[in-house]
Length: 324
Image (cartoon, rainbow, N blue to C red; front, top):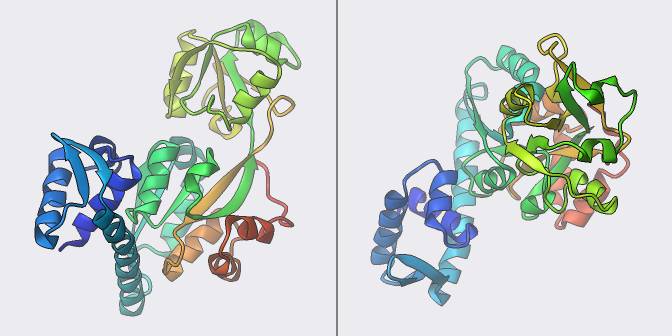
């Protein structure tokens, strides 16, 4: 029995028995996952998944029990490694973070620079993905923590700690009609095709909620997870861009105009999420504090001790978050 087999097992179960999705999230191959799960079943002498041909159809009763134990074993293994590494070399190791392109490109560079000056011997790895991919990476133990900006419901089994508030801007070429307006409305925006994030019109998104409340159905001409890719298609004239305000750097993008949309959309929260009962290295605590100064060791440990998402939310209720 290998820990890798347990990781594959848990990932498949959390992706609705879709091996392809699990393989994509874990950056491995579908045949490799299938082979390792078969080997584990042969070793245990039971079927973990029922099958119809090559398709997994459900988790067997034995599989349900094995999955619970697999998740516990993965947590224990990760914590054992963290404790051993902390005592072996407090300033050496690796840190894996899952996040979106916007966070990696615009929010993290200066934090990473400061962190590397303090911990030059810590290997830092950024795993970019969609909100669903990010949630799976941290849940499966493939990364140490996640920095997420949308769909908090995907992270319900994790400890969510708020970092800062952010909002959006409309991006258009300098000669676009909207660039001539002092303030724009939802009707102004809906008159044009939109170029935005792939997750911008999910049911919980402030963008979707604002247009839905106004009984407007704008046309999305193009969507992507990468803010820089989105900006290229804005330049090509595909439509009006809606991006996180932090993704616009005026000195680097003088051909585009950013128009604040704070008056139209609710503010969103960026969170750091960790697995319950995880043992964090000292340098992990330090990275988190560099990213969100109010998240010190004491507050993080208090959040870890709480048993419900409601209690964790109450813990942070009186903290005034910065806006970006």
